[in-house]
Amino acid sequence: TTGCVETAGVSAQYDAIAGDYQRTKESPLRRHIEAYSFANMLGDVSGLRVLDLACGDGFYTRRIRQAGAAEVIGIDVSAAMIGLAEELEAAAPLGIEYHCADALRLPELGDFDLVTAASLLHSASTGAELEPQCRQHADRLKPGGRFIAINENPDQAPEQYAGYSQYGFNKSGPTPRLDGSPIHYSMISGRQLIRFDAFYYSRKTYEAALGAAGFTEIEWLPLQLDPAGITELGDEYWQEYLTNPPVTGLRCRL
Figure (spheres, helix red, strand yellow):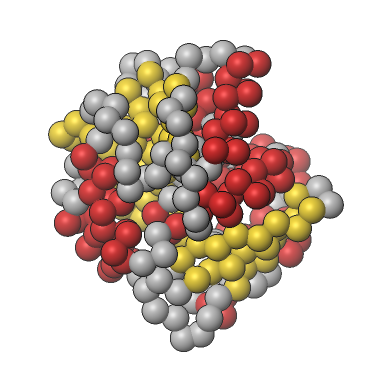
């Protein structure tokens, strides 16, 4: 692991909640909607070289490797998150390499077939961060390489930021909103209440930033429900989330 330079903002935010945030990955939403949707967006990764940005504790990094990727490198700005990822790698080695680094200042690691970022683009607090972040992703890809993300739903209005208490979290934000407006999340993990922020950008702003970086075939993909989730909790449990999705899939090609 590279040395991690501690920075304010996102790093400190996730350092403080690393352990509790890790436990949220065990929730039915994470398992039956987010992880299931992410796997479907990935498709066949056999033999690919993959860079997983905002990897956190390596939740998706490990799944990408287990799906057959030839090499997977995980990067996160939070030293605490990377520490958790390395503990899991030590306990059950998969040959994954982790680095602690800012998405705007990535180390030189060569070119990749695929760059993934489950929750990263919406962490840019200003458009001045969003555009160079997209360029960083593009710079790490081979021509024809893909970028895949789970991202804030740009089509969801602030008055729709409700109805998620049954899933263990709440979401709020200002009205009216502009690009860069904060979106506040509060989430229950065990008995702990954890809070973190994302930032709103319009679909047009995202697509302009991605296009300027050289991405084409930009697709916004709806989340999908694993049939196992219906077996476990019934169909009705999922309807509020699926009819008013707070996040969405994003896929594009360099």
